[in-house]
Image (cartoon, rainbow, N blue to C red; front, side, top):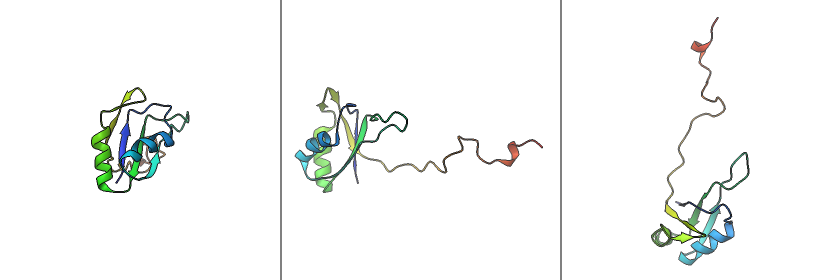
Length: 100
């Protein structure tokens, strides 16, 4: 399981986030998603810790804490939703929409 960290500064680095969460246990992985078009950070990230107890300790300590001028939102990450096939822009391949 991983931890969702929201309301991050756009200047945050993986090293910054690792340093904060390392105070609560071993950090296995940090992900900071970027915007596909601009390459800019999206303001949230995910942290994986070594154990469930470490995750719980980090969530309890950091949720609502101020860091880098922002109040963090920290909780268990929810599984990624399946959005179905991509690439149609909602148009699909519906034969009923064609006129003959």
